[in-house]
Image (cartoon, rainbow, N blue to C red):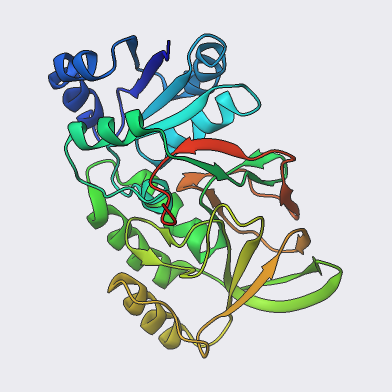
Length: 296
């Protein structure tokens, strides 16, 4: 018999995730016959708990935002469990990448889960840190750092205000390295490593990125004028993709990058550990995730 465990990040989206799941407990148990719900108040415990749960559950369901999804993915990776998702975060970018509609009822997500359409999601790593949607260095990382400091702001407003602050304070930086055996050296505002198309809830950073195709996209925003950077930010804020005159996209499988200057990095919207050297590649196996496969 299929067994399910919901792992709920009780702090996700200002406690909203816990409230929604608690209000839906009766429906959840009616829909998923063999189900356990676990509420986690300390996000740092998500990976270890997910790893433990994956040993006894057929499907481990992440309930929260992109950070929660990333932690659960890290925890169950390499097990026999499937990953499910009930997205209740502010951005829910990974949910969109696996074909889910956002801001739907819990019933909608439960129906997706019981249908068990499995997508084999690529698992990229940057300096051995797994991310499942996007990682960003520079302006991108600084925006997410500021967003993490704005505890009083919610949803898209938090990222918009953080982006405005980053616009005035960000500095360009020199980056060099090897991308699939090709040398590269450029001064940039940011680079984003995209396994999915959208980040920050609405920013269409890499429209053609697909998280099950075995390749990554490196989005490069050169160090042009700050005025042009502002225009780029406005375009992204309006849900537009950047034209070729504003950014370059390089498709790759492996990369080694060196940065000489201070910068910020994010992984799936969570503040990451910055370094002067980055190695980007895929893990050997993909992650089976329940979503809506567009080819079906």
